[in-house]
Image (cartoon, rainbow, N blue to C red; front, top):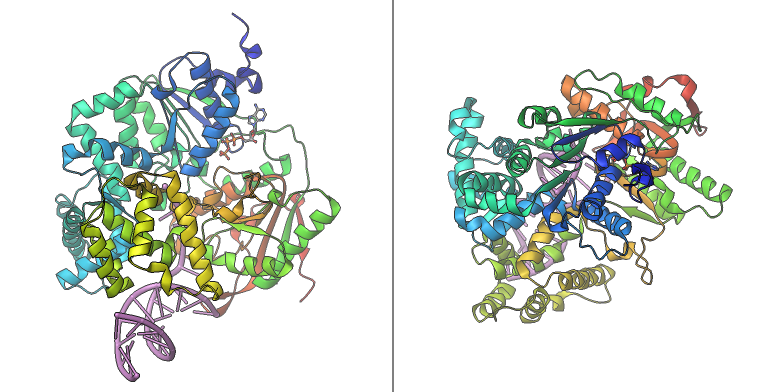
Length: 611
DNA sequence: TTCAGTCGCGTTTTT
DNA sequence: CGCGACTGAA
Ligand SMILES: Nc1ncnc2c1ncn2[C@@H]1O[C@H](COP(=O)(O)OP(=O)(O)OP(=O)(O)O)[C@@H](O)[C@H]1O
């Protein structure tokens, strides 16, 4: 046998990475900081299993944090496996996996195969309906707040029937009543919300051993990324699935846990030790992404946290450029600074691509001013997240028709169709009555568009209407990729903000267009860019005002800042504005506490010259 | 049934 | 400030 280092797969990895990739069997936890190659190791491990250990790809389950990340991992895996006619393992989020399981085997829990998946706005609509039904005011019982409590309960596997036991105080007691009715309405609608997907799958596995066995026999190897951001139900799923074969590889970093607001708990990482006593832990300490200066500054920020371990990192990229800090007078000037710097970069490095730049911010609202300034300068940008494609009126209208076509009990889709217009609804329902069976998603969509005269109301000369027509066309092109209607709707529900508009790609090459990326820090998880801007580093914004009361929440903001900084490979720009419009009011802000934690030698401070 | 105008509320972060 | 939800007029 040849030495491990000569192996075509292992030769691209350092020593501890090789150890992880070629780890024989049993539970394995890779704990490592940002840029140390965790994701890379996971991909190579899958490749190793397939090409060296001859594990059939269909026996491997790859779970990621977003479906986009799953897509990227599949692409990288294909590249590594090259000409081998290997298939690629199934890869997706916990939610997608569960959706698939319930589609197939949900009937054991009386979940029909054509169940609907309710997103945030469907959930809110449902809660409003419940409040109406129980004669409660949506002012006292804000749907978002109630939903948050219900979601927390579901994360802990507490059902509507059990919730009253745990409810404390009038608000929670009323929430218990709402929760019960909410579940009843969901059931009537044959619908599940996001949390239900996880919870019901756990219930299914616990209740119906034969189903669990079926999946345990199908999957023998489990590879899970970003484990620090899993919640309790996801932990239970991991345990149930991997218990039998024990071949579990998990990667994570507590310092990058940023989703606790959604029930995630980084302690799931160490909890694995209890449920998998054989657990082997491997640390990766070499960072391949950032310069020494960037790593040092990021480390100075995260060092203030005391609740979780902070993993060591080193790099061979000694020194590097200093971190620039810009103190702007207001948010307009801050945005102008970003644009000016990018322009300067482009001039000094003629062929440098706009894809090298990312602008990160704490809240979505901050993107507006950056967008406006970029638009004004003529520089193309790509907004990740933001007003999502699937949230546009015309798209939601089309989807409501399709949803009711798939599942006639879907109350929220029904309500929306009524709201679109009585006349169109009438036409739609008469079509639905004699609706042909077994058409493709696209055929259904086209028949609906024709029978409701949906596009007739739009005026092609009105640019806004034209955009709507274009959007519907784009929906048609997405539909061609998912001929099965249930799968199409499932994909739409689970992809949500991950969807990139077609205009983001070059027509001929299908490569992403050259553009500056704009996104929230949360959305930036797992990415890397040569040049990173973090804007709005002000007390009250980052850390956010709603997170500065509790120690745990401040620590999470700090981790968020750490994640943001460690996205940068070569150059990091930090900025804040002394004054900023907040809800239409001007407010004065101090520099973020995180900036004070970075030692001055690492910083190059640029003061606004326009004061 | 539709649309224009007003009010009020909100911004953390998202599968 | 900007958007969505609601209301009243046609
Ligand atoms: N052994 C290696 N040789 C060369 N490059 C490497 C090696 N390991 C990792 N890299 C590179 O380092 C960068 C970071 O890797 P990766 O994204 O896998 O890290 P990560 O630990 O998952 O980061 P994060 O925690 O931020 O998601 C990538 O560009 C990757 O290609």
